[in-house]
Amino acid sequence: MTTGLHISNVTKYYAEGRNRISALEKVSISVEPGELVAVVGPSGSGKSTFLSIAGALLKASEGEVNLNGHLLSKLSEKELSNVRLKEIGFIMQSSNLVPYLNVLDQLLLVKKMSGKVRSKDRMFAVKLLEEIGLGSKLKSYPEELSGGEKQRTAIARALINNPNVILADEPTASLDTKRAHEVVSLIANEVKSRRKAAIMVTHDERMLEYCDKVYRMEDGRLSLAGTNVSGCVDC
Amino acid sequence: MFLALKELMHSKMKFLMIVIIFVLVAWLVFILSGLGNGLSTLAASTFQNMKADYVVFEQGAQSTMGKSLISDELVAQAEKLSNVTAASPMGSTMATALKGNSTKNEDKVDIAMLGILPGSFLEPTVIEGEGLSIANPTGVIVNKTMKDEGFKLGDTFQLDGSTQALTIIGFVDNQTYNHLSAVFVPMSEWRKIAFAAPGSDKGIAGPINAIMLQGKHIDPTYISSKLSNTDAVTRGAAIHGMPGYKEENGSIMMMLGFLLAISAFVLGVFFYVITMQKTNQFGVMKAIGARNGFLSTAIVSQVVVLSLTSIVIGVLLTYGTAAIMPKGMPFKLETNLVIEYSVILLVIAVLSSLVSVRKITMIDPLKALGRAE
Image (cartoon, rainbow over all chains, first blue to last red):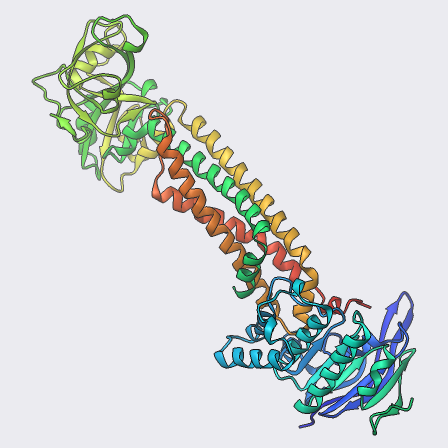
C-alpha cells in the first residue's frame, strides 16, 4: 500500500457556456509521510481547487489522487466523507470552529462523527490540547479565544483522528507575525513527529522556512520552486 | 444528540423563544380540544354513555329524536330480529323545571326529559338515591349538575307550561343531552308530558321517539327493511344527528385544523431560518468528514427535544388552566385526547424540520473553504 499523498496528472475544468475553463492543468505532486510541502501562488491560480481535490471535496476531471492507498476517483460520496473523516486533517483559513462547542468538544465532535467517544479518545484529546498549549483552555468557547488559540484548536482538531494527511488552507491568514510563526512551527513539528504527509497552501512567504519543499502554482500549473535542506529555503 | 444539546445549552435565549411559541401553540391546541370534547360531551354524553349500539328512527327523521315518532309496538318486533339482543324504547323532550312557585329567572332551569322504561338497559346507574320504578311514575333520576342549580334529593319540581310535577329520587353522573341536564322519566309519565296537547301523538298507539338496540353485528339496512317506515343507524350516527352537534364540533375541528396547519408552517420556518444561519458550520463539519446522517440526526433530535419540552409545558399549563376554569365551562380533558394531540404536534414539528434536513444535505462542503469555485 502506498502511503502519503500522490496526485498524478490531475486536470480540473469547468464548463462556462461553450468554453472550457481549466482551473488545474496536469498537476502532479507527491508528499511522503513526515514531509511538509508548501504551495504558493497568486489568488486565482488554482490553489483552492488543488486543495479541494487533494482533500476529497472535489472530484478531478482527469487524473488520479492516491490518498494513503485510496484512489479517490473510485469512491462514492459516503466513502469520500469517510476518507475526509479518517484520513485527512483539515486546517482551514479562519479556523472555522463550531461556535457553541468548547475547545475539548471541538475535538470530541470529530470522534462523535465516527461513532462513540471512548474514555481513551477523551484522554487523547486532552493530551493533544495540552501538548499544543491549550491545557488551560479546555472549557473555553471559540469566542473567548485569541486568533492563535483558535488556529491551534483547529490544528488539534485536524490531528484528533490521527489522519495520514494534513491539509492546511492559509492557516496564518488572520494572524500577526509572531502568532503565525507559532502556528506554522507547530504544524511543522506535528508533521515531523507524527509522520504526516502535509500540504500547506499559503501566500505568506515568511512561512516557507518551515517547509521541506515549495511549489508554485500559476494559471493552474504546479512547478517545484525550491527544496529546503538546511533550514533555509532558496527560492 | 451531542451537537443538538450542546447548542441548546449555548444559545438558550434563541431556543427559549422558540419554546415559548411552541408552548403557546400546544397550549391553545389542548385548550381547544378540551373545549371541543367538553362541548360534545355536554351535547351528547347521555348517548355516548348509553349501552346501546344502534338506534331505530322513523323513516325520514334524519337520525334526530325530535323529528322521529314511532309506535312502541315495533319494540317487540325489533327484539325478535336476528343479532338483536335487546331493544328498548326512548323518548326525548325539552322542558323547563320550576323550583317551587318562584318567578325569579334563576329558578327556571332548562332540562332534557328522556322517557325510558324503568329497569331497562337505558337506565343509568344512580350514584345517589334509587332507580326508577313503574310503581312511582313521577319519581325521576337527574344528572348531578342539577345539584349546582339548588335541587336536592326528594325535591319536587313543577314543569313550566304543564300541570305535571316530578320528584327527584336519584342522581346520576355524566348525563347531559343537548347541553342540558338529563332527567330520566318513566315512559308512561314522559308520554303524559310530551304529548299533553291533543293530536300531538299523530294518533300513534304508544308513541315513542326511537328504539335503542343492543347487539353486535347488526345490519342497519336489514333492520330498516324488517320494521316498516323506520331507519336504523349506529349510535355514532345518532349522535351526529343531534341538533347542532355536527355544526358545533365542525367549527372546533376547523379551528384546530387551521391551528395545526399554521403551527406547522411557523415552526417549519423557524427551524429553517435557524438551519440557514448555520450553513457555514454544517459545511465545515461536512468538510472534516461529517456525513449527512450525522447532521440530520443533530437537527431532528434538537427539534424532538424542543418539541417534547414545549408539549410537556403546554400540557401542564392546560391542566393548570382547567383547574381554575369556572365550573360551568364545558371543558373536558381526556388523557387519550392529550396524548393524541401531543403526538400530532410532535409529528408536525418533526415533519416541518425535514425541510431543513433536506437543505443541509445539499450544502456543499467546499463552501467551508471560503470560496466555492
